[in-house]
Image (cartoon, rainbow, N blue to C red):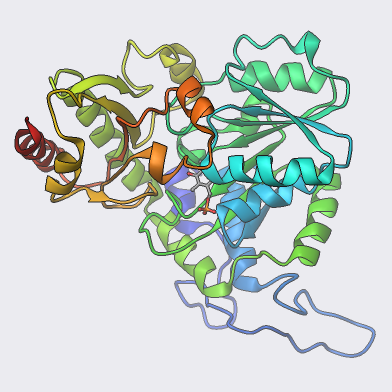
Length: 380
Ligand SMILES: *Cc1c(COP(=O)(O)O)cnc(C)c1O
C-alpha cells in the first residue's frame, strides 16, 4: 500500500461493531478471564487498545516493527535517553529542539553521562569519537537554523563503532524522510506537530525495528508512565488520516514564502533547505522527499521594526510550535531557545533578529499578502 492509503486505512479495525473509526477505550483496567490466563490488555499504562492502534499505524507508516506512543515529544526523547548508563557519552546536534537541550544540560551531568555538541555531523571525524560514545542524537533539518545532516553517513559511521543513531524526525515525518531506511536505529517524534497537525494535542513516538530494544523500552515505558492517553491517541490517528495532504500544502507554502522572503528588503537571509542555494540542499534532495513547512529568516532591524512586524500579522499567530494547519511565527532567541547560553546562541546564529515561521495550509497568496502588509506597517 502506498503511504496515503496506509495513512487512511492503517491501525486496528473495530472487530466488535465494525465501526469505521476505531473506538476510544477510556478504561484504565481490563477484565481478565481467570487468575492464570490473561488477555492482551490489563492496565492502560502498560497497553491500551486505542494507543496500540496508533502505535501500529505509525510503525507501519515508517515501515518499522515497533512504535511507542508517549505523552509528548519530550517524553519520547526522554524514554530513549533512559538507554544510557552512567559513564556513557552522547554526541548531539548543536541546534536541537530547546527542550532536548534543556534535558541534555539538566539531566546528563546529574546522571554521570557525558555529552559532546557537534556543529556539523557531515564533516565530523568519527575516528576521534571517544570509545565510551553510545548514542548519537541528531535533528535534520535542525531547529531553528535548518542545517541538514547526512543521516546515511552518520548511521554508517556509528554502526561501525556500535553507537546507536537516534533521529528526531519531527520536522519531516515518515512521509518526507525515513531515517530507519537510511540506517538509523531509532526515530523520535513530537507528534504534537505534523502527525496530530491541528495544534490541539501533545504527543510523541519512538519508532524502531530491534526486538531487544523493544523489550528494554517497554519496561522503561511501563515504569516511567509517560504514555499517550486513549483520547489523544484517537486525535493523533485522526490527524494522520490527512497527513500527506497537509504536508503537501505545508511544503508548497513554505517554498513559496521562502522565495518571496529572499527577495524582500526586510529580510537579510532565509534558511530553508528547499532553496537551491541552501548548503544542505543536495543532501536534503537525496534523503528527503520535501523540506517541510518550517523556515527561518533574519529580519532587517535597521530598516524595519520587528515588534511592529509580528504584531501587524493577521494570519500568522505570534506563538511557538509548528506543524499545525494554521501559520505561526516566533522568535527562537527568546521563545524556544532561551535555555541556550547567550554565547551558544551567538555561536549558532540564533540571533535576536532571527524569526522562525511555520507555514500552515492556507492559500499561499493570502499568507504572502499578510507578510507584505506587515512589512509595510513595520517600515521605519
Ligand atoms: C516540539 C518538538 C519537540 C518536543 O515535543 P513536545 O511534544 O512539545 O514535547 C521535540 N523535537 C522537536 C524537533 C520539536 O519541534
